[in-house]
Amino acid sequence: MRILAMVHAIYESARRKDGDAVITRWTELGRERLTEMLPDSLVVLPVGAVEQHGPHLPTWTDALLVTTVVERALQATSARTVLAPTVMTGASDHHLPFGGTLSLRPETLLAVLLDLARSVAECGGRRLVLVNGHGGNRGVCTDAASAAVVRYGLSTAYLNYWDMAGETPGHAGVLETSAVLALRPDLVQELPDRTAPAIPQVPNVLVQPATFWRDVNGYVEDPSRATAAQGEKWLEAAVTTLAARLSDLEHVL
Image 1 (cartoon, rainbow, N blue to C red):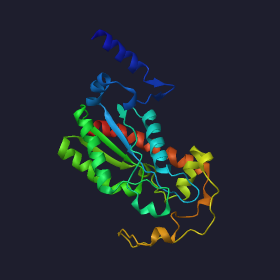
Image 2: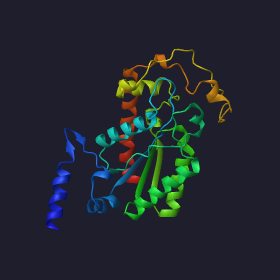
Image 3: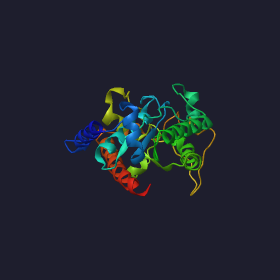
Image 4: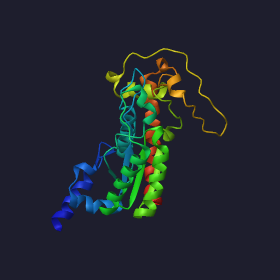
């Protein structure tokens, strides 16, 4: 026990480096350490997608962005956290007709998230934070967070990373393109230049025309206006707010 205590003390003393917290990754710890840490930690689970993002962005855009924001936030927060591996594939059936998309049916994604929540609880975790990176996952993540409370006794929280920045990105539009330019410019193809297509809107109503994605060729806005500087600014806003929210959640969950 004294050896374990010494290891724990060394670990905690090294947890901060150059002002940033060291990310505690589920996948890098053994079962004993996880058993020790989980009851007092927020388990943070990013949920992404692998889907077409127009002719110019990589298919893992959503997974890349949510993982980046979460990892940077964990380095900046004082909250005690354990980072679970990103769920790479989301509910993206609406993008299947364009090719390049891996999708889970909503009911399948819900089952996956609930199985992961069950696993967290079985391993001794008590608090789970779902951080979503894809618009098509929103309903499923809401349901999963609610069901995990009832089924497994977990305290849960759910958020979309872009809400932390205060501005919702359009699919493969200016903000997402800007963010990928900031992170992985090598993965960005020639930016299409076009007039931004109109998006049908009715106040306080979710409008989903059956032909919308086909009509706009699978991406929105005019991505040619994207810049890496704009992307880094938007990402940093999301990181700063998420870091603060995680600190808040450590006290209220």
